[in-house]
Amino acid sequence: KTKNNNVKFLNSTKTLVLDFKRVEKSKIIIYDLTGKIVYYYRFDNQKQIEIELLLIPKGFYIVDCLLQNGRINHKFIIE
Image 1: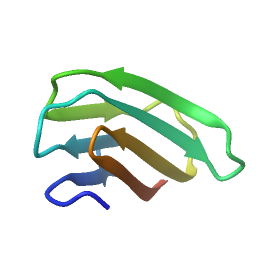
Image 2 (image 1 turned 180 degrees about the horizontal axis):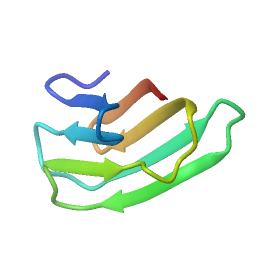
Image 3 (image 1 turned 90 degrees about the vertical axis):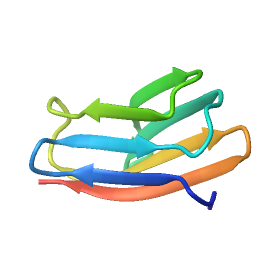
């Protein structure tokens, strides 16, 4: 896990919020529990990203953030 980076899911607004310590090139991939990719985003030079997941069905998901200096995995539930 990469230090000083934060990933949280706000169920009230169905928003995934990612805060990164450094600005860098990265990829965000969200998988369901079967391994199917439900969201993919490549970004550059962003310290904070907010992803609205209103169209994704209820269930368990894993967000995988591939950063230049490491990787962050975070599990969350859409209710």
